[in-house]
Image (cartoon, rainbow, N blue to C red; front, side, top):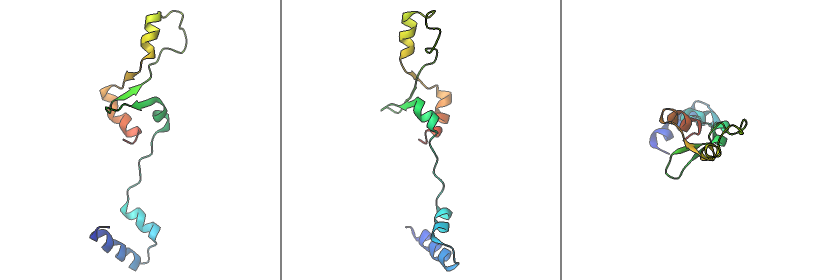
Length: 91
């Protein structure tokens, strides 16, 4: 513990605050992972975000085989959405 935290803790206990109340005074709450996003987005080893492509659940007869093959491959998250997605994943 740093010296300022020690001084704060001594002041907190002297004023009659409980330990759990003091803990919340010094620590910010953790960011929770958005579980829906966590199931849909993967982070690669290089740090990029990957997602599954849409348009492959129904009406497949009118789509060509080549198009369906391309849709199987994961796609990158757009750079405009990346900051928001990283926050949702708590990264």
